[in-house]
Image (tube, rainbow, N blue to C red; front, top):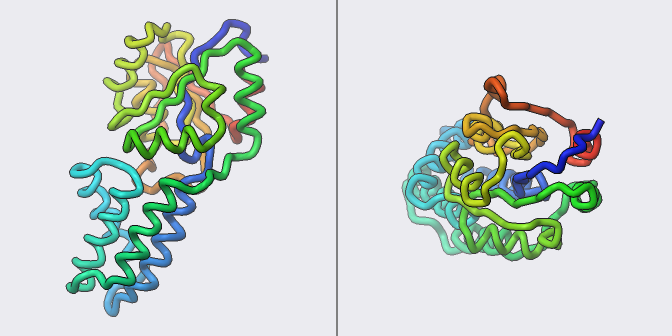
Length: 234
């Protein structure tokens, strides 16, 4: 039965409201094919790229431009030669497309956001990454009207969640983080003392993979199969 008391829902964007990682995965597959490494198979190259991405995130944060830098660095290290003009155009062209193209909204998202609003719940976008890129996605999505605010943070950590809760004076007991990433959406939110709704996505970025922790005492954890299933609980 849906909760009768209005709740605050902090809602993730990428791979929760719209498709995101699938486009990065397609680009990685194309990149590995173009690299055509003579001594490493595709899986080994992918593992190497994962490590490069971890380094780049520390230096440049998240987003398509950070990803493009990772591809350039990976190519230069593995091929031991400069990036060709053709590959450079491909890599940066992809970054541009990701930051400007139309978004593929996940099925049932607009209807569910409308339902949650009509039920009196307070919706806030909670995403991480490059401010310009992420805010641009929110604008292009056509979903901004459903949200009272948009919060874009450098990293979704427990302190970041506490700061947002304090900023808006949310009540932790009636505040939920909704998202597809155990590492960024679920575990740190619960560690911050707020509830969480895990909405798994088959294509969640590998660097976001993590086991979902047990809910701490006094914190609630829900798991639903699809975003539209929020209507059954809220």
